[in-house]
Amino acid sequence: MTSPVPIVVPVRLGPRSYEIRIGSGVLEGVAEFLQSKCAATQVVIIADRNVREPYAASVFHDIQSRGVACEILEVPSGESSKSIDMAGDLWEQLCAWGAERHVVVAGIGGGVVGDLAGFVAASYARGTRFVQIPTTLLAQVDSSVGGKVGVNLSTAKNMVGAFWQPAAVFIDLSVLSTLPEREFRSGLAEIVKYGMILDGPLFEYLEQNTADILAREDAHLQHLIRRSCELKAIVVEEDEREESGRRAILNYGHTFAHAIEAVSGYGHWLHGEAVSLGMVVAARLAERLGRIPADVVQRQHALLTNLKLPVEKEDLPFDKILAAMRRDKKAAGGQLRFILPNRIGAVELVDQVPIEKVREAWEQA
Ligand SMILES: NC(=O)c1ccc[n+]([C@@H]2O[C@H](COP(=O)([O-])OP(=O)(O)OC[C@H]3O[C@@H](n4cnc5c(N)ncnc54)[C@H](O)[C@@H]3O)[C@@H](O)[C@H]2O)c1
Ligand SMILES: [Zn+2]
Image (cartoon, rainbow, N blue to C red; front, side, top):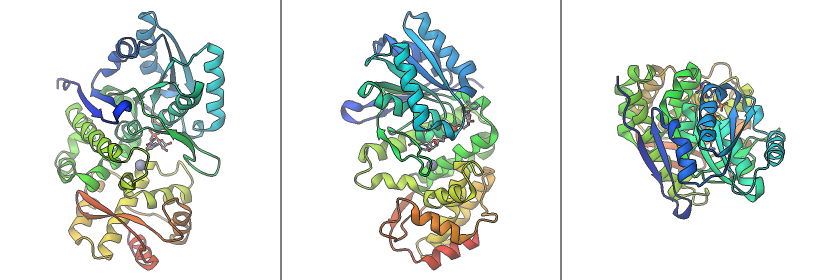
């Protein structure tokens, strides 16, 4: 199959507007962009060790061959790299290399490196330009868009950070060929989420093309990533700094997911896997509250199952999940709040949900 033509999704944020380029081979355009659009004289690539070869290395060579000073700083793979210690190491390395205020920082990797590199860019020399080159499906449809950057504290994920929009996002479909299967499916869960919260036709597209999507066909990937980025961009444009509450709809399934991840120990469930189960429970909860009919619950369950995502809670006890949810930042004044579906393609923030209903929904999964 021939590669689809690259497409551009704009993110309109006034002076912080930028473009997301999506296609097979768009990595080859990074060096040109940095030179002609950013007039970059210095570029520092912060790369996940797993993707240094071949992706970061090829971008590095392209930049160098244009006579622009470039350095690669490698970061070990995994969530533990998203730390203030690692940010500190990177600040020191940038400084030792001679990076100035006008340096452009490029993050190449999944959400871990994107969040970390973005945080380093937001803070080094009081803020430098930043380019996102996401290499996991999850980062391509979610974390690379919207400008949230940051690191974890030992007891709290994403607790220190900033809103720092990139100058551009380059989403190369071909890098997904090396992504492990579980990581790939984990990204699909976030796409199901976009369908549930905003876009019934996207949900139907996932239902109708499941096999080809799992086979990672470029044309389908491009469509799914494009639509996800467009939807995330719409939400971010309405609520860039999470002030109006609009951005909260992106957390559909996530109150449960964060609790699942915390209770089972980070890493046991991949984030998207936890989101999958979280959406199953959230839909059941909506049904119990009389908000949606059973067939909506069933359709979502069937789609997640066909995408080979987890839909069962295994042995996670409700009391621990509840305690973790109460600690979550969305539990306002001890009240549990959830983003719940009204139908496929529309959700709402629901306050004061009775705990017994939550327990029933959980026990059913
Ligand atoms: N900023 C945001 O808005 C936002 C949104 C969602 C998630 N996040 C953050 O994203 C992080 C999770 O991101 P993730 O799921 O991408 O995890 P990740 O960055 O840990 O990547 C997952 C694994 O895939 C490997 N990998 C990456 N690209 C690869 C490729 N092309 N081929 C082979 N292996 C590859 C990585 O080395 C890693 O082992 C979390 O820290 C989460 O908090 C941020
Ligand atoms: Zn998520």
